[in-house]
Length: 104
Image 1 (cartoon, rainbow, N blue to C red):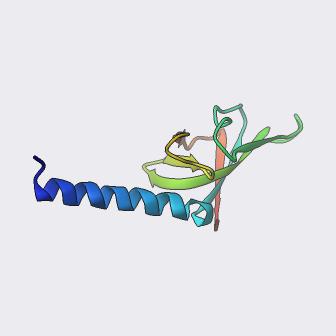
Image 2: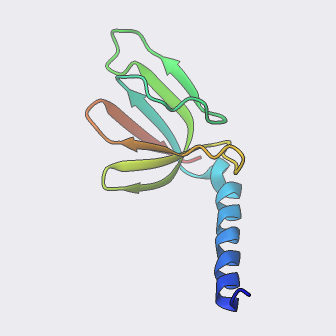
């Protein structure tokens, strides 16, 4: 049998996950500008725009939400994230990438 503390922790985790999913559309929006193509396509709601060769950045990825940021690393979810389509992206800040954050 599970102890009551295990059930309590499980319930808290489930509620936190449900709140995260409910809040994604309004959470911090992320735009990723990149010199090189990134493997950010495929997540629900993620789009890419290609810029001309004269531009510093050749790719713009949108439709991402900020999960968390730590030590130069962004953890991102597509705005259409769900448990069935559990994409999570990790983007490390570099000279070849610019991250723009805005309200969702």
